[in-house]
Picture 1 (cartoon, rainbow, N blue to C red):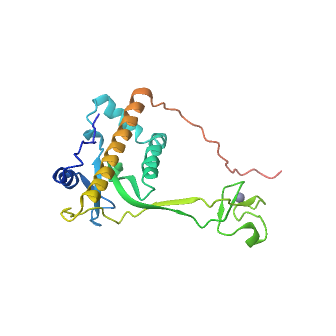
Picture 2 (picture 1 turned 180 degrees about the horizontal axis):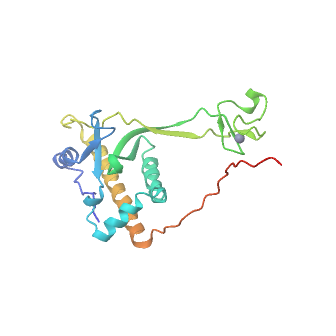
Picture 3 (picture 1 turned 90 degrees about the horizontal axis):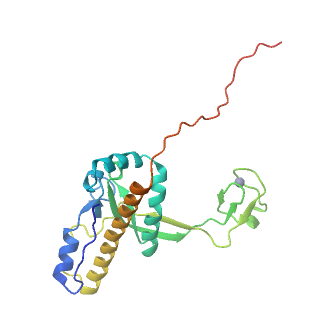
Length: 220
Ligand SMILES: [Zn+2]
């Protein structure tokens, strides 16, 4: 399996700049937006897999369960960087993992419905009742702590066209550590893909879905 992480001498300005400026980059949005950031190519043919594993992986990427297992790694990466930096898939069929600038902030929600989960911008006191606007049940309660809201700035590039010449050594080190952590995270994602390939099979089931149909009946 392909790996991306590299050793970099954090005492050497030259080596750090070389690492940052030669790192693979990809669009943060699309090709006409022109913003790019640090990225890694995880297209299936780029992963050094056997033919059988490649075929299996093509099946896996059609499954939402597959992404559910990888999602935790993306969350952990964002969490390590206070969500100011996040990782995400981009490219057709998600063939690239890209480093994004992002944010985490307390949302403005004040209450939620304990029955259906619907969120509300007003407290129970402000609306004068605990009725839920969606399901109509009297089960709306105030948040003790408002939930966090996460997002990225997909239009923002990172270090695009940067030559790093006027960066001091501390800023350089900090950036290198970030990009190294991003590379390691991509390796962790691929290790999990390896784990799924080795330990799981794709089962096919036919599911019969109950359906309500209307028919005409002659009135007696
Ligand atoms: Zn509700």
